[in-house]
Image (cartoon, rainbow, N blue to C red):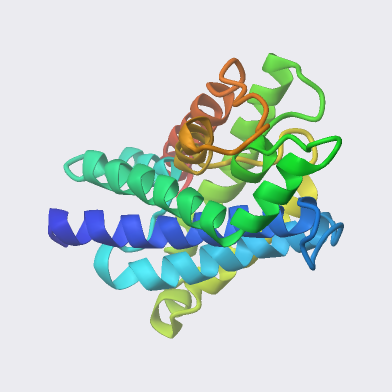
Length: 241
């Protein structure tokens, strides 16, 4: 795959991922949304379907990593680092684009939220935050959850039938749903540095009235934790398989 194909595929695929993922959170938490208060299960499945749509779309161009932690895990396992910067650049651009598209879709709801007597903070639509702020515990959660994502993805590559049938992406989508349901409670399961950092930058820049803080003091955890988890997954896979 050429660098151009990889970059374009990751931009498009990650934008779709964030559009669906941030979109489902906006749908559930913003007032005047028809999905208001639909709950955590809906959010988990929305993110899973975002992975499904984004990865299938990007697969012919880039393989559909959509996540620097996945890209890093594959590079650690294979020793092939040549296109890692291209993948990550595409993922970051795509994540920011997807966040902007989500804001446009819910523009009227964001404006209505700002006009409410008690405006809701909007960062949670774009990026993650912990239920209990404990940097060590939050970091460990993100590392473990990301190993729970990347190590199975690497192992799925050993199952020949998944690749031949084209169902590998579907299985990964359900894996993301499972991580959200089982491991998402403590930190909101970033498990993807681009997914958190790109939209956080957009949240900082967008003219959302009464949007609240972008919480840059926490922002390193959903970046560093998944990168450590991705690298560990590559090491474990290379040693065990």
